[in-house]
Image (cartoon, rainbow, N blue to C red; front, side):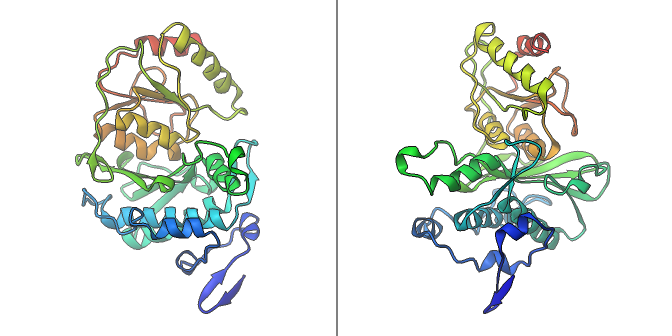
Length: 336
C-alpha cells in the first residue's frame, strides 16, 4: 500500500489474500482508466444522491444513497481490473470487488445505524449469527452474481464479437432483520442503475415506481425463473435438472429463465415479469432483502413444500399471490 495526496492505493491481489481493512478514503478517490466508464459515471442517469419514496427507520434516502455508493465502488474496482478467486467450486467466485463492497457497506451502515450487527457472505464467522435479537442485523450479499460481474470485466478485454451477453445481471443486496423477522430490504443493480427497496408496511419500489406482482393464476403457460445450486450441492443440483424437464414437459410452463443472479431473477417476480422463482439450495444473504420486497409487492414466499419460508431454510420459492403452484410443489417431490 502507498499513499499519495491523501489517497490510498492498494494492490488488489493483496486484498484477495489478506484480511486487510480498507479506509473509506479508498472509495472516494479512485482514478478510472476507461473513458467509457468515466462518461457513464458523469451521466445524469447515474445519480448517487437518491431521494427515496420511503423514509423509514431501516430504509430511507441515506441508506439507499449508501448502497448506491457501494455499487459505484464495485464498478470502479471492476474497471481497474478484477482478480477472481475460486471458493468451493469454479462457479463460486470471489473478487476484490466483493471484499471492498462488503467493507464499504459495513462502514456506511455502521455510521448510519450505530449499533448494527452484520451477517455477510464473505465473512464466514458471521454465518452462525443468531437472528433472534432486538438489535438491527444487516444481512449482506455484496455482489450476487459474481460470475456475471467478473465476466463484465472480461468483456472489456474481448473483441466485441466475443463478448458475453447478460453480464449486467449482478447486484448488491442488504436485508434488515430485527427480532428474527425481515423488516426491510434493498437490492441494487449498478450496471443499469436500478434500485429496488422496501420497508415493512410501506410498499415496494423500483426507483420511484411502485412494484406489484402480476396476477397469473395458472401454472400452465406461466413464466418461471430459477437459479441452479452450485454443482458441489449435487443432490439439489440434480433435482433442479430433473425439475426443469418436468416444468415444460408436464406442467407446460414457458421455458424457465436463469440470469445468473438470484436477486435479479427474484426481482422479475416483483416487477411482474415472472410468475414464480425457485432455488433448491440458497443462503440467507441471497434472499433476505428479496423476501421483504416480494412481500410488499404483493407476492408470497414459501419453501419447496409450499409452506411459509423461514430464514435459514435452504430452499425457496417466490410467487405472485394468485398462481396455483400445487402441481409445481408435487413436481419438486417427483424430481427428488
